[in-house]
Image (cartoon, rainbow, N blue to C red; front, top):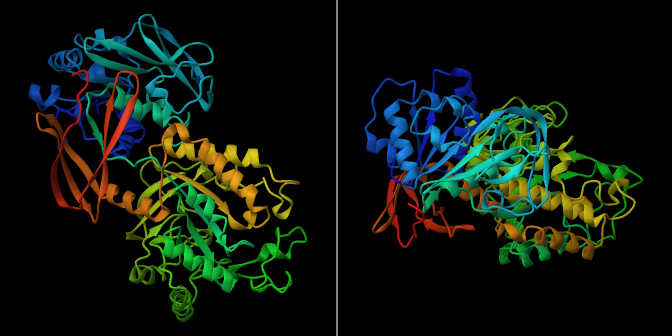
Length: 590
């Protein structure tokens, strides 16, 4: 049971089948991803629950329409008293008029409903809406129904374009209450869905109303980078230096046969310095060189010309036939892995645990060979045994959200084909018409005539937007491009773009990190759960269950009445059960 006075009690009613099923995807999946200690009070359950088990919480969350109406009178009274004494309340229940006495008085007055198609943010920012620019408006792909809450005496941190409050915050006694006028439909992908820029309203809102200190086992605001199709460019990986200046250590997916001696020497230096981690991407894919529009910014003398000036282009992957999707024959697969081993050994480079396959295509017969080498963290948001353009309807955690272009944005889940592989990826590919939305340079450089000139401002804006969505999702940000596009521009132009992206993230307090380390931390968070959280005189007592093979973060939220602040504590490895006390965590409003 996820209990303690820093846990969240989620109120739902399983007798309302459709509403409860919606809350499973929009609310409960998010709480798991946020790493909150939470459990359920189900009004459909006939079993009685003792008062302390109900009322001794950091916050109460009404998960769906009608959730509050099903509460027993005594439970409603206990919750109302706990909120007035300092606990928080977050409501996705639009049916406040049918709440029982005890909690009905917590809700704002309401007068009818209206259609909501957008959410805008006023000039004065609130901690719940941090990360959104004053005056920003988010247009929803679908429309939904909002309750028209009376804003008198309330704080309204977000409104629809028609002026109707989208969020309403009230102080009730010592407790903070946050009401979503659109209910949980905001996180239904028929309206918007998770990982599309408004998740922060949920997790920041919960952290804001909850009694502090409030712990989460969430992903810190990591920012890293991933470069695909790498042969070093004309600069022999000098473009990585500006990333390293910001503390970002990218994953470089290598086209092994396309690197020359100068490239390999540079890669080895980067590896020794800890400036990047390296993965086998493919042996080669130089099909683009057959185009008369291909023109590198400048040549590198000792880079191999495998295509003979674009006349003999070829794609050669590791374990999959790119035309049929079938695995290559066993002898070829084993020989290909031996080639990879030899190339990395000659350079003195350790292959990353990150599995960065070209087109995300991972052969089924290759799986045991990957595991033998410890390459167990795919990053491409795709499954094994499938072509890139033929992805199945997978339902990966946390949200199983498949975009209209067939792509997944955030994936932190085991591969269906083998539980030893944990796929860890955030890609903005789900936000656009094509997957190239994830590439910050796509359409913005002269590569194959995509642009007449380098559009640095557009590239910066896309990079900032992509990373901000990742961090708003309480995930991580990845600055991604295909290296051929860097190959087509001047190094100072790339540096200006990367510097501009990082400058555009400054207000989010990003934590630059290596791409491999992000996957390792996500694996440890995925394998564990915050099962008990209780603040006492000695500090914040937490119990964590599961398995983590190394250190991982515990985030503790506090606030000063005007801003939310995160303090992160590194906890040790977990082997089934860990109890620890985090000292010196200042309390708030309880």
